[in-house]
Every structure is written in C-alpha cells, then in structure tokens.
Length: 116
Image 1 (cartoon, rainbow, N blue to C red):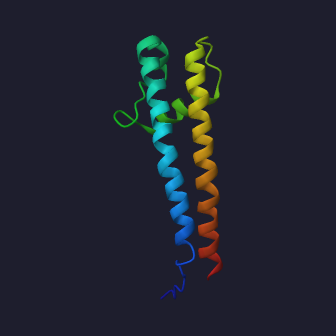
Image 2: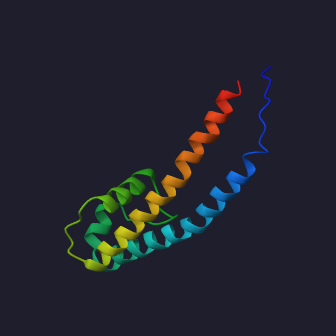
C-alpha cells in the first residue's frame, strides 16, 4: 500500500487564486467563441460548414474543437475586420487561460511527485 503523506494546506491559497482567475477569464473566452461561431454561422456559412458546424456545447466533437482552435490561429482569408478582432480576443483569452493553468498543473504534479 502506498503511503501518501502529501500536505495540501499550503496549496489551498494558490489553488484559490488560480480558480478565481480562471473563473473570471473563462466566461469571457466562451463569450468570444460564441460570437465567432455566430458570426461564422450568419455571415460565412460555407466556412462554418468547413469547421464542422462548431458550437460551444452541442454537436461538439474533438475534431470540431481542434478545427475551431486552428481557425483562431490561422489566417482565414475572409477580410472581415470584426471577425479578426473577435479572433484576436479569443486567442488572447485562450493563451491567458493556458498561462494560468499549465504552470499551476505542473507545480501541483511536481509537488506530488517529489513527496514520494
């Protein structure tokens, strides 16, 4: 049997900060994605179809998610300044969320691994 002596008390404040930051920024990211999806659906139905008819929750497959993220980071050739602005906002929020989450995830896992 594994003897697990990990003390979580010193991580709780850090977890609270990370949770609050992600709880604040994630809804803005989902709002930006929603605006992009609606703009594609209404103004560029062919591109919307090419992306697999993405949505935030319904009809959401792994491939649709990958296609949508790729769409954020690749030039689309649609020459729509508003869509480009929305893509930049979503891209920035995604990067911010990842920069908050990934170091925290690595830190927690290293702390756990170094306890053994």
